[in-house]
Length: 420
Image (tube, rainbow, N blue to C red; front, side, top):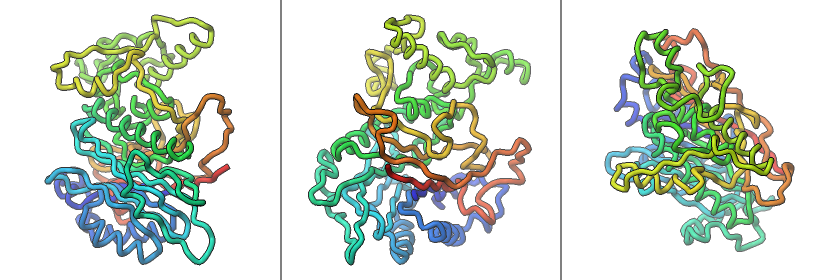
């Protein structure tokens, strides 16, 4: 079982008091929240625990000794670079279940201009016997040869966790971070014989956005829509619907700015979101290719930016001659399932005064090579902990987390995996 949990760094909580204006002060006390988080981990006993928003001192002086006492070991902590960044990512694993082969931090500063990070580890299954010692010293090896097996212990999967940039308007920077992480994971997996990957964390995206489409479809068009819509946190709204509800034009009106949908028509245009638009276009391209032709009306949209533009480095990273941003994995969503179509999730993983959304995800899969069948083996999600459902009657004044029962402003994800 793998757990992913944004634990709400106390320093960040204190910097944004308006988010918790309707939360009882006792529910925000770190000592109380820490004890409840550890109790949740101890009760579930997952094989691996991925934490986001962990402060350096909290990691070293609280999480490490407390979790080591119940059988866990820690990967080297991944702190966000910078003097004013008080948090980072941690991964803990049960020494009786897993053997660590390699660990590394992925820094997104160069790719995105923002100082978010990810932490990844390559694991083998612990063999029964008197010794379950790990090979943590191997994590200092050259990252370019990450996790190449040196003994009879064979790597089984790569586990990565991240906390992407929050800013809802900086979709290209978020996509650059995600693409950088997936590219690195893909390289590590292939260096280890094509092992499976599990990628989890707080992605600061929703299931209706471009970033989510990139993960589950294996390709997306980063420049079709304005970057304020890429994460899915800002919703596309039909111009007529927006004018009817507010009586004026709004920045979220997409019909006038971007055209109907670039060649893909929805039966319900007023509720169409980026995922549906992009997936419809992807399917039309695939159908045209299967029929031996290319349809110019649905060719991927590329964008030529001025080299002096502030976004020039992001265009260089995300752009391609085809107009598509791709990766080689066949990722599945361990919570929402394999057939999710981008419509709003009924679940939420964060709930405070500003939103009730699903922004935490766990994906799994392996790089599909030519000739692989759909049932080529590998990891599969057996079951997951049910998430709370969104309420149409949600009142931000009366229901927010942290609460007496939930120690963070996020809900933990827990997924049990099997291997064929």
